[in-house]
Length: 239
Picture 1 (spheres, helix red, strand yellow):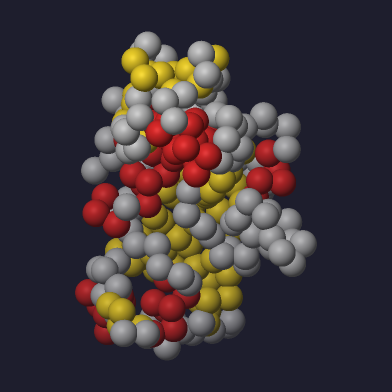
Picture 2 (picture 1 turned 180 degrees about the horizontal axis):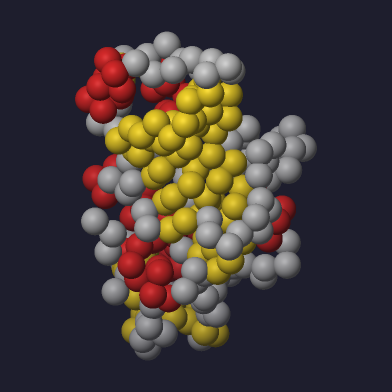
């Protein structure tokens, strides 16, 4: 059962901003299951009956979508440069959605988009080590020593990456490039690109092919599908 702070639930229902919701609570205007609640930070569950000034609030149902992000799209809700964002693809969905994590502007692939804050926090927390599989087109070819470095973790900008799984998918003899699959569970800025750069290779093209057990099967670039309840439950118990 997911518990959330009362002021957050009121804000997400569109009643007021979180700060104003806090004032409503301390003023005694909010009831939970018939009882006045004035303590900030009180947590409520999905089934709590919440009223503000005796009017029940309508809580938004939770939805999570698997999106095949194209290249040239920003992984944000809005962009001050006027670039296309992932939520532009969900204009027909009547929920306030946001991406779980991010993919770089020039990176394509699997991105989860949701209005479920608890799920987003769970998946993005470093301790849960959710595996993410990328396929990169890199310049040059990895040597056995470079592969070993990636597997043990490489250092960039005073940070050492966690050990990665590495699989060379294909080498192009006449183009001096390789297609490499890299599995990581961190989410630092430009993580994959910086890992390859640390061993002397630039990334020409990058795509995320898998997130936990989820894949892009049956989707083409720009398409999405809603996750089933079983898939969401499985994500919440991911190893």
